[in-house]
Amino acid sequence: MYFEPPGAEAPNIEELDLALLREWLASLYDQRLIVTSIRRKLAAVRAMFQFLLEEGVIPANVAKRLRTPKMKQRLPEVMSAEKTNNLLDLTQAKERDLAILELLYGCGVRVGELVSINLEDIDLKDGWLRVRGKGSKERQIPIPERARAAVEQYLPVRTAVPSERALFVNSQGERLGDRQVRRLVKTYALLTVGDSSVHPHSFRHAYATHLLSDGADLRSIQELLGHEKLSTTQKYTQVSLKDLQAVYDRTHPKA
Figure 1: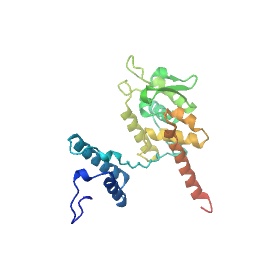
Figure 2: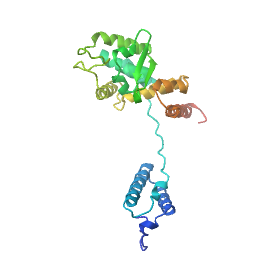
Figure 3: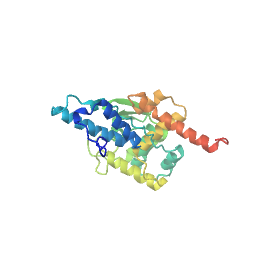
Figure 4: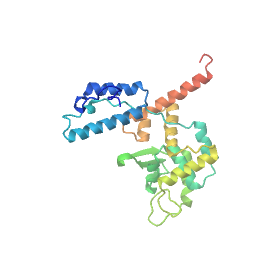
């Protein structure tokens, strides 16, 4: 243990002040531990100090004043426009499944939003889709022509139990579940482009990134995705810059 080096006496728990704990925290960085490991150790120390505080052993939880290291934001893996189009163009899917794939990419909806769509939520005449996002917030999304055509082909073969208003139904005629959508996306991706890592959210990432690459502004993309904070949408600018750097490195003679 850090506070019990060989040949030295460990300090009493009451003597572990903020300065000593910061010294311990710095030693974790010196060991080149990954951030998740440091955060986990820090959480354990805070919990221990909180327990000792509640038991009356120490007067204050000084560990609460230690700064938690920030996790490095992971950029989402984004399918290229070519890969996305190949998946949609080559998929020999039945009408329902093709409509699902086209809406996932064409409207950038979350899988939970997709399975929550009711018949009255989709306006094929004017090309608008109403979705209920996080916190039951509703938003309107334009439906691109391909997605609209796919839904129009699906509706005549949709077989649902009486009073079922869900747009997408399963083989029993009841509302399709999100797990079923994840499974079918993975299956079609594996069959068409040989990539089983594709999931419903992959289409949402592709939707946002491709819109940004083609000139859409962040505020509009924020509204389309239903993000509460613009900072959530801004991660797609980092993805675009990453892709741009890759193109530069690949093509520029002085790169």
